Length: 326
Image (tube, rainbow, N blue to C red; front, top):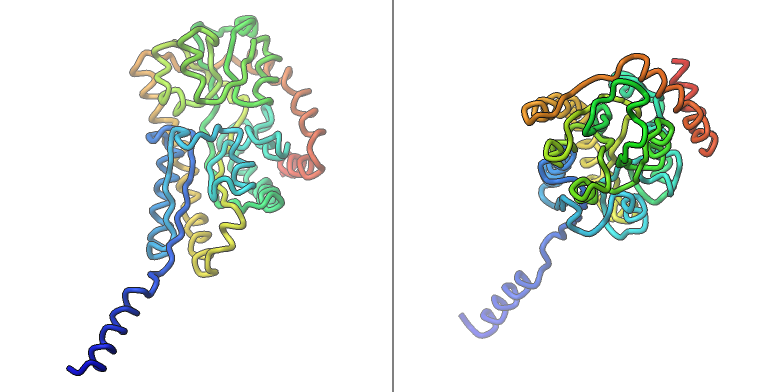
């Protein structure tokens, strides 16, 4: 090989080394729930599916347990402002950014899981618009199971609610519990267990998966299916980050989200049944409120529901009207 041929070979090799590898998109997804929580498990399943449908070119890393430092109420604005490219959020904790995000959680608007499924058809178009108006694309939602009130005592009548210091997750739940005669303390999930341990609260409003996450049997004895609200989780992506993807990757990810969302919704029901059993096995008494107590709670909550609808833009009332007249 002469020196010119050798120079050509070296040049080719150098070009091969210098040629950039295909760019990979890496997104960090903060989740406040523990790694074992079904919301987090579903987020991980979605991340794995995204890697598959994009041939590994879009990678989502799940950070459970609030490990990135974002609290639940921060997430809508964090994704909107690009502090994170993608995030998971409990919608009724985001009402400071837009009251419409708390529409599904209005007190006693929805009675059963099947009604929650029916409500989705009316609510989802509005949610899509609200996220788009705030520099985000809503990928999918995951419902939480029926809401419970976990206490240290039996609740046999409306009078038994009086004065109980209870954790609430958002402003709406705070008003519901106050109307029931309780003393609500609004706390993010990360502060619930320390507050139970110190006695700062003596009851918690939440769902069965969270009760298991928090090993509530170490602090509490009874769980009552109040179904005072039906809560919705969502995963959205910052539009600036989304628009950096190729159209092919956008389509593949959107298709994966739409395909998996029904499975995520069913997982809420499955998780509720499983976690109620775990709670019972650990000594929690799972119970229903009597009809008179439930009717009184619903009656006390009605003015709260109407006042919250009045604070929303007209889309809120339109969704509720369409749902109730279906």
